[in-house]
Length: 291
Image (cartoon, rainbow, N blue to C red; front, side):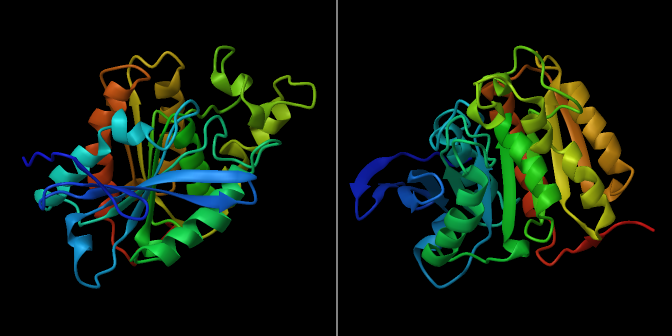
């Protein structure tokens, strides 16, 4: 295993340069008309990015409801994991993009049009700014909790734009979230009086997209994971999602249960397996439903 040590260096956007065997982390932002403010993001550039003209796939990492663009760096240890997996040659050199949007659940809610900001502003900006492969074969999504909720939605809503996705402890429910879920207090799912709206939740939850996803021919490879002690009942909910997907794409969905709860200890442990699953899918894969 290689160990990376940070040394601060400021050139344009704030850059943290590491030793030659590891990737770099760059802090950047876009001005979003959908959010009416800046969207901050961190981007991991693999060591191979520093020279040449090679283009790279992009893994978009979405944080949970209470997180920000630093969550996967500081709590998920994603840089250490990426450096290790690339050095071991078990994944290709990959750009990792970590945007920040606290309490937005990555949907178009009454306050934040986060889904539009991501798809119509951030992704085009990333594909203009960095040497990325672009297109479906070069786009991967992963997320934890509310970020996992978004990843499942995006895979079903935009299968022609994503080749593989990983949802870690996704905050998904076949019906309504439990009384203690933060979804019941966060802006995307509140009505005009500030009360939880079951209609808003159902409109933005994956069951509303499942029939359409299964009716079209393209399949997204999906990696699902939950801790066995998740207090939100997410292991059972994720198992139910897995059952529905397995019946339609048995070779392109995996479900893993590991010891632990709804925590960064679980997500930081699980992300390596998720990255290996996703980033080894064929870049030109266009999976079709079985007849």
